[in-house]
Image 1 (tube, rainbow, N blue to C red):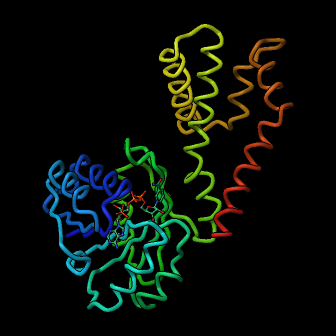
Image 2: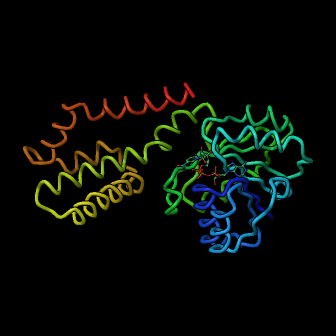
Image 3: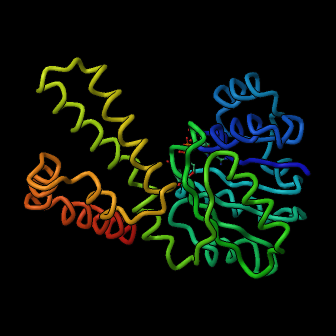
Length: 263
Ligand SMILES: NC(=O)c1ccc[n+]([C@@H]2O[C@H](COP(=O)([O-])OP(=O)(O)OC[C@H]3O[C@@H](n4cnc5c(N)ncnc54)[C@H](OP(=O)(O)O)[C@@H]3O)[C@@H](O)[C@H]2O)c1
């Protein structure tokens, strides 16, 4: 199987590095085209993938992955429409560009998958959503999932849920970084060094996420387990709730979705 990328920026680089690191894909199976040859050649040198000179060459791969910015995508699709497109599957990771939009350009018979990864792909810890049109076979859907599972976890999701997923998984890494930073700063206020506090805050968020995913317990059950009567933790939880912690998170998610709608 050959994998062709159009756009070799942040996301494509993370995905390609993840694919190779997973040992399930060989560098010689991966090819890519980018309008900016300098960045792309650094990626090619460090990974061993093949650089292409035109999108048309990428379109000859078995699986074509479109990894340009959403505002660039239309121009790329216009170019692709003029080509004999005989790849088995086209995958797009562009935020806010749905399958219907892709179909308008590539035709209803083109097997299409839309994936929404997040930036944590850079450390192999993305949480991605995947939706396919009805032309995609089970095998090709599994193949798409195999690509993105090399940079984290993948869930199949109805496309109607992509806007909310984009907010709670696409934008929320930034929310999490903000929380980690706030927690670390509180540690600094309490006398810890910045390095110690950041390590403690980020490590605790990482461990807490694993607890939620691996224990199978409801987050509130976990909160109860660490909230002893008249204890310290319950005081902190009540302070966060009375300051509108949950409401602030919901409003942030709604703000992301409103902005997405207006673009
Ligand atoms: N970053 C994220 O967290 C994230 C999360 C989910 C989804 N996504 C999606 O992933 C896609 C890529 O995002 P990114 O962050 O990787 O963007 P990026 O770093 O800007 O990468 C896009 C690359 O494509 C190149 N390019 C521009 N026009 C091109 C063309 N006509 N043909 C080929 N290459 C072209 C860009 O070059 P120039 O720099 O010269 O323009 C750049 O190197 C976007 O659609 C985004 O919505 C990103």
